[in-house]
Structures are given as C-alpha cells and as structure tokens.
Length: 424
Picture 1 (cartoon, helix red, strand yellow):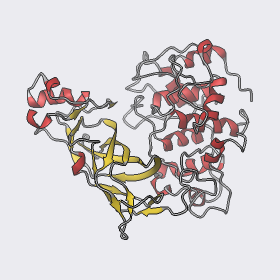
Picture 2 (cartoon, one colour):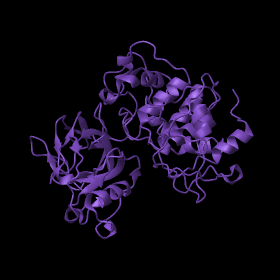
Picture 3 (cartoon, one colour):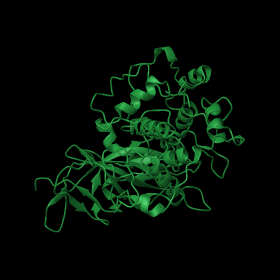
Picture 4 (spheres, helix red, strand yellow):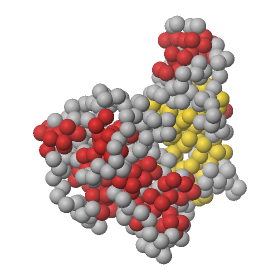
C-alpha cells in the first residue's frame, strides 16, 4: 500500500495536529520539517518521530519543536490516526454530545469512529479533551486495524511485568498489538505502563510500528537504540519479563519495592493543599518526603525522588463524581525513571472550605469558580498560589476536593525494582 495520502486531506489534518488547549493551530505542510530542536540525536523516539514527520503523518509546532513528552488527547489521537491510515469507513458516526460541528477535530473524530479506531461513551459523549492512556491507544490501533490475538492471551501478556494493570477490555487487543510488534516501551521494554497517559512520542512510536506491520514503513535498523524498546514477542519464551534489552535498568543488583509499600510524599519543597474540582483530572508531580528502606535498612528510594502522576476523579456508580485520588505513573530516582503502579485512597469532595485554609494553596481554575460560590469570596486571586493546569472537565457539583499531599496514603499496588544506590 502506498504511503502517499490524499494531499488535501493530509493538509487539512496537519492544520489540526498541533492543537493546544482545544484550539487548532495552523501548521501548513510546506513549513514542516523532520528535524526538531527538542528531539536530540539521543532521544529514544527520534527515528519514529522523524520518519513520520518526513511522511507528513505528524507535524511539529511553528517554533521548531515537537514537544515529544506532551500528553495526547482523544481528539488529537483521532486526527493522527485519520492522517496515518486508510481504513474503510465501516460504520456511521453518531453525533457526540460534546463534539459540536464547529469543533476543530469533529471530522477527524467522525472518521476515527467510522474506521473502528475509537468509540464514544455510554452517555453519548466522546470526551475529546481527555488525555488518552497508552492502553487505549493500543486497543484503538488493534481494533481499527482488525488485529486479534492468536494463542494464549495470558502467555503473550506475560511479556510485561505490569500485565496486571491492563484492564480486562484491553487484554485481547494489547496481546494482538504485542504479537504484531506495535508496542514500544521506554525506558523499560518489559513494562507497559498501560494506564500512563500517552505522550506524542509514545503515539509516534506506536503509529510507526503499525505502519511497519502494514508494510508501509520499513522496520527500524537493529543498530538503532530505539529498536531496543520495541517489544519482540516470541511464542513460548515469556516467563514474566520481556526477552529484549531492558536499557532502563542496567545495574546488576536491582532492589525490590514490594506491593503494599507506603510512599510518604509531599508537594515539592512545600506543605500546601491542592484543590481541584470534582470530575477534573490534573497532572502534577510530588516528591518522596522520607527515604523508603527495605528490611535490611537499605535505601530503595531516597527522599526528594520525584513521583509523576495524576489527580483523577473517582466514579461512584449511580451518583455524580464526588471524590478524587492520586495515581502515580512514574518514579524518578537519581536521574532514572521507573514505571510504577501506586495510588491513594479516594478523597471525598467537600463544601466546608474557608478562605483561611486556602492561603498558599494550589487551586485549579475550575475549582476557583466553585470556591467563589462556597466561600462567598469574589476575590480569590489574593489567596491563590500557583495554578495547576489539567483537563477542565468539572462536574456541576458545588464542592471541591482538597488534597494535602503529606496526608496521602500513597501505596504501591504491584512489585517493581529500582537500581541499587549508595546507602544514606
């Protein structure tokens, strides 16, 4: 199949690939380059990104950057798959309640639905601004390309140390994606990180591998470092970890952080509250407040290590969303990043907030509007510290979720290992 797409369709899609905060950013095809100033020669996904940019399947930004670590929304992913694939339109797209015809990606969303890559939610919404997790990207590609797993799904998923984090709906499609070599895991090839938000680099790698599976792109050369992160599944050889090169953990004496380990965290360099609106997802970083040690008093995770994650809504069936929790995606220790599965208990929303407790708090814009109603204070700007940005999907509840990071019962939900470090 030819890699050349219809020029008018390609140009129209390129005009939307740089969408920021729900607005389309025009990126004329003639201005595109395959080299980006923030994708260096040693960046893990450079071959995937540059190849797709050369073929005008993905685009950068007018300032010459690609922003590879920026999260991808469902609308942005729809625009990318529409541009990358030529699958038939096998079903009629519904009118999603939250995708008006004037929305920048409405046509791309309709096509991605009709091609079988994406679907909506039972309430008739599409949630175009929701950041898409890696597992949903792989499920979308497997479904849209009509891949199905052969043999034992459990055996295939045994490739990944964190296979238990794959939701039930994704197990078959992820196994199929694995068998077709669509999966690329950085920095640890045997850690899928299914619930982690997909970045532009992740999506570029998955899309490139899908085009390789279709015979539309050449497989990466074995000598390229990026090829080390492509999951190479071989039937009958998996024993719970991938047989490929795990370049993210080269120390010969890794140490286990066991399921159930409690992580004491705080907001970096401060004791502050984080205030979000019910139903809102917010990406934020915390840090380890106290060293994590094992039974031999060896330091597993030193204080000050960074925990990257999200404050996410907790859905209560039969009721509006009235709670939230913190979910950790990655942990950075001494410059090395590890995928982790850790989360806190749910924190209930409250309508009992007074202005005094908000001094120095980190408050999202959506929560600020609710607090104005709760507190009666029309001038909250004087008590707001740094505003956190995130997905702005608050419910209509007149309540907010107040999170004190130092009080979170952040608990590891599955074993992981870190490289041995000097004891301190």
